[in-house]
Amino acid sequence: MEHRLTSEEAVLVISTAIKKELSIRNTNFEKLETGSKIERTSFTRNVVKSVQDALEANPYWRSHNLDKSIDNFYRVLHKHWD
Image (cartoon, rainbow, N blue to C red; front, side, top):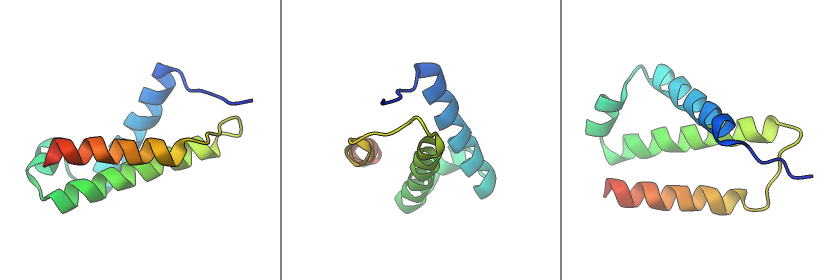
């Protein structure tokens, strides 16, 4: 059985990962936005990895499209920041 997150669950998982990474880096979105593309990319990769880890830790969750979804996310993100 494939488990799909509700919108609320997805927001919780993603926001938790973002808050964790902001805390680790001792930064905020304003500083991140004015930082280098390398810093923003690193931040995003770490957030995506945290989300992926959280989802994979859920015994009811699996997806054959995880890699494709992550690649699409990066493509959209990089397009926005170019």
